[in-house]
Image (cartoon, rainbow over all chains, first blue to last red; front, side):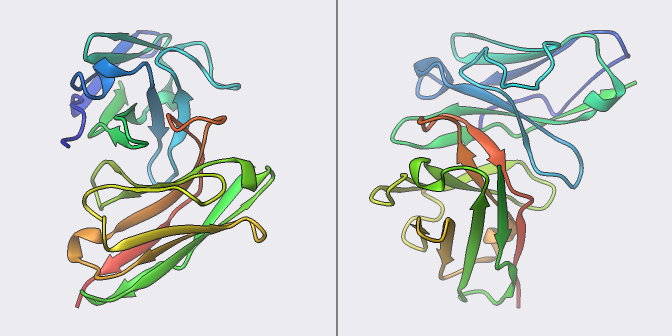
Length: 110
Length: 119
């Protein structure tokens, strides 16, 4: 099974909004409402940011939001801050207790 | 809540390695746990998962038949036995606790342990 498709990079200025897309198939994103997103700063472990497409774990700022339409999920970061600069990975449940990740998107805050 | 991986290192192709993941700060025995890896400069790849009791295990096709996941709930520890290692298994290996009682997202990740397969 191929990885989910994400743009290699996105960028935005402080205070702006950016959206990262994540495209899969009807066997993963389109088939389940179980998309999650992870933030990874260089040399650090991934951090849990969004689950079940739209839900935020405790402690994650409400500037981060998730959505899904068909086979494509999206992560939107509003009010961009310098500390948001990181790699972002989408992930979807793919059935049979397996997960599939996206290739990752590097967010640059200009 | 904390998970700490160990056991990584340099191994020759065809060799074996056993990774461990020590958990603390939560009731280890009631959560499914997963291994996820990240090759150098690459994205995340789900590797394997195990149910809370250890009775059910799941693997990515890329490691099926070569890797074995297990757990010891009395020691709050997860394991990954890696056999017949290949160069493409070179990666940082993370253990991660699933969120709530589901199999759908990974709530807490360790810092990872580096595995290098090279002659």
